[in-house]
Image 1 (cartoon, one colour):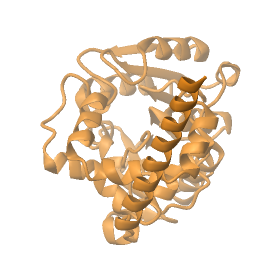
Image 2: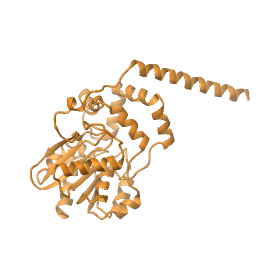
Image 3: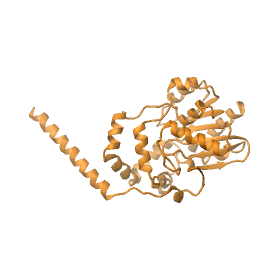
Image 4: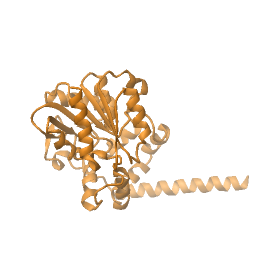
Length: 305
């Protein structure tokens, strides 16, 4: 009994010490809070930042995943633009789109739908990577997309830490501490980027790290991540996927260490869609194997207009 009390008091003391250290760290540091229009000098529509390639053909809308600015499509976009008008946007919460919230699937669906309406994109092909795959599926559910392509994303909700744990973390000072510490730790950011890329990544030097982390200088960037943590991983259910009646394709990096290949194969079965495995690519297959990804998408879009 005495040992148990000692363990409990020790744990309590550790929690108190860590909390005090976290509060002190948070008080002595600060988030960057730069208006997005000072960070992004490209195209925007109603606060949504986007890139564009091509001037003719069926429109394609490219949607990145978690923490992915639209530059992740910088290689695939021009390839697809040989026969399409291609638009890559930053979802609210990532990149250089204004942070508005509430950072849910319904909200992102509204954002993409408004984006298409504003640019007059009727029945586009919608391609989503990772988290963006769920948004692509949502566009099909709404009847907006003529076709969808899921790239390294199964479009399903759930997974990740238990909701109770993430809610407790967001409400504690530790979320802010972890957020600021990671952004001040190039080594940790480098490891995260390398894991996402997979085997054939470019040199992860300071320039590459800045390319991924510059978005966190945007005003309310941390608050957006807190909102994402509260809502959990957005997506549809398998039953929802099976109800979709739209031409679909699933493309997956063979060396994906973030989302297992088996998940992609199952979503392809749910959608009654072809499955393309991209050799030599990890989770960021559109950056590691752009030609293979673009070829798979172009072949599918040409086959089923």
